[in-house]
Image (tube, rainbow, N blue to C red; front, side, top):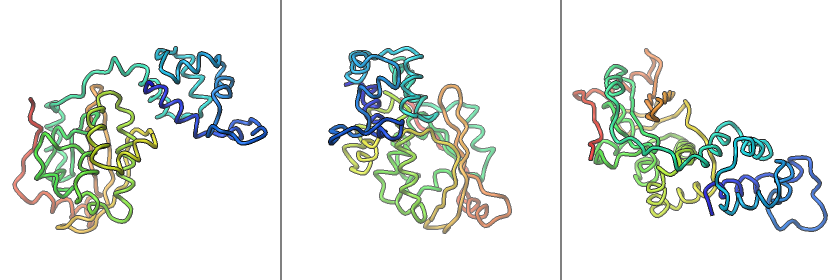
Length: 272
């Protein structure tokens, strides 16, 4: 069964007949959500063709078919992009392993704002001191193993790095974003599915969401509680420049300044 079919089945199971104006019919429905024939009719494709898509016997539908399926399934913008990427995933380039020099220079320029350069699978290609110290335990991790999603699910310190219910929200966002990456994430997904039942459950739920800026509340063992707003800039090659900003002159800004009190450096992920 193809990744495309897996996504279609999942989203078909999330929509009931009443959601799209169809009668529920008589008797108990053995299929959660819409039946295949119902979705095929809504999308304007034959039931035989739709079955081939779900079973992975046709993995190259045209743009018009994808748009029709997206409309019938009521996909949002991130989910529509994911649907298109599943068709093109075989043509995706591998994730970068080295940060671009121009982005590395920005890491120093934005200090004391914690900042990272991430590839699509959330490997940390480079970070400034405040970025590494923002998440306890990350600085001690060997550079090849530094990955935001791996940290969230395998380092116990990640759970106390966020105040209130912050870990759960961040974990859900990480997995939902990883769903948008495609085949480049396969090795990381296999690793974390084996190591973390919580990751496996979130992966199975199949939320799809591209990461964007958000408010995070941190609870740092040395600095205390503070709130930062993340901003994410994505380059054409998929590398992301991520910052966690505080308003100058606030206690939150004082907290991030404390994170960088030690001598400055930029930590890069080694290549090879």
